[in-house]
Length: 269
Image (cartoon, rainbow, N blue to C red; front, side):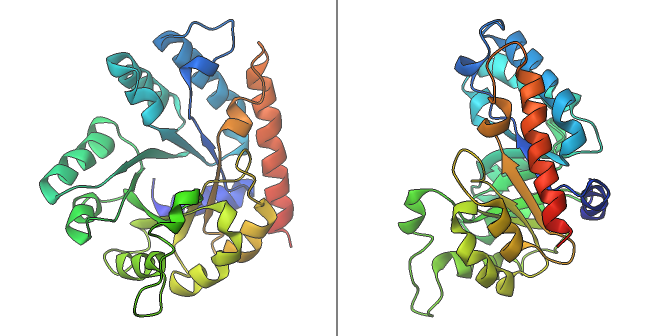
């Protein structure tokens, strides 16, 4: 899916919700088997229930890779069930020397045909270039994350006066186009969005941390929105595990609808 199509979906739905399919096999409702089939049934029901309210799905690959071959098969089946009207993200946080990154890109853009993948920029330009070589695919680079450990490196001041994450945003943005690149910015850092928008005014931001992590959707929207909206706000546990009863899909739809309604209201201001 191209950026233009994503923007069209956001404007049509008045929603910029991304549902995170961080499906912890141990948290499946009791009536579902804790195996590949249980994960697939759970994910399909969540997707069917929430698709009207969101524009994107993010699959955190760790929850599938940890289950070995069965997990990969569940991830393939889940991805195949997502409608092509929705932007698909492999939250894999890859990044390595060029020839290795090329294999990661092939895995998540060809073998598993995701629209986008999250990558870590620590190893520099040659570790990201193989992802950018793909047409109509998006590379989502870690910028300012919502975890406590972001203080260790991302928020360190450089001799230039910039924070390290600001230097990352500034440099990486020059390596590709606004259609090719997005950035991860955590919702718990809402006060930093205004400064970030001065560096990358037109790029999309993938924003985790709303929901279970306590980030403010209104603050993120206020400081992070641009002329194309430019936001994908992700909620995972708050939606998919809203209930562990047999009605889990209906509860997920209910919470997703609440997010979508709040987003529509925020966009009308």
